[in-house]
Image (cartoon, rainbow, N blue to C red; front, side):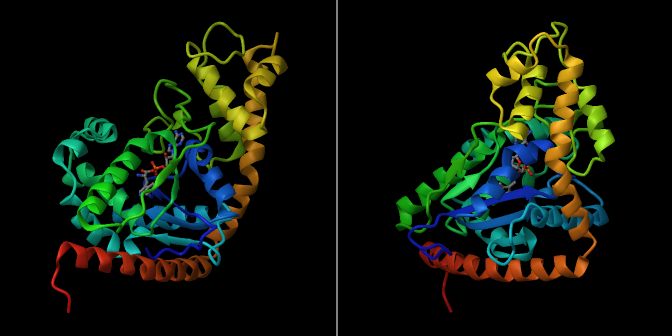
Length: 336
Ligand code: TYM
């Protein structure tokens, strides 16, 4: 199968939707791993702007958010010379393969996707078919490039399983066309929770601004949000399922400082939540400051962004075309 990798290197691929400013959840659950994996692998990272239109937004907002998200990927240090960093809508093969895969996915298995059920409840006025076939487009994103590993947060695990099932079904019919991807889910940070309702995940589309930390929040805003995070009345820093708010803040602190939960409990033994939240806020601000500075710097240089996006699309399209051609032939489309 044609992929950009040789025998030793793995192909790592992941995308982020252009549906809002990325959050601390995106960063700790996905971006941090992308950055770490980029050093040793062939990597393909994309802005999923096609996925973003499953929820209605103003065209100018989608355009702005797509450019901002692309700048954020560059700011993470994902070298566009070494890796492929591009926008999904610039490579038409994603939509083309998605159509083919639609025809190899059962209605029943797509209906089981919990994210579809959640999103169709939240956007009850616009339960479009794209929302339903969303994971199949995601499967196309992955399978076009022969990805070995897909670093994602916990919420994408079920979509990854669907991509694997569809790929296996297709291979079963036509031979080894697709490489079967593995999810890569970090041990820590795979599910960062809302600061206000710690029973649900932190999301960039949450209408309550206090529920999430955006990667572009100024430090004082970030600090305020962490200080007003929901905890409990026990005032003891302890990791436990019955303390979701505190446990979430401990996870965030642990991801930013590298300290384990036992060390964190010892550090804050006998101290109240005030001290703890101040330390979490400080650690998050420290972690994100260099990223935000780099992001501002890159975002100001539109010519550089355009050049990188054009080159990324060209490299991606070259690989995508090869896979799609093979798929079309296997399925039986008349070749000219
Ligand atoms: P998206 O844009 O919702 O999120 C991007 C990445 O961030 C992770 N993530 C989180 N991790 C931990 N805690 C959280 N609160 C949190 N919120 C988000 C997500 O798991 C994801 O890894 N469908 C995908 C985008 C996509 C994709 C793909 C991913 C499109 N094509 C192909 C992988 C491969 C999505 O909406 O992610």
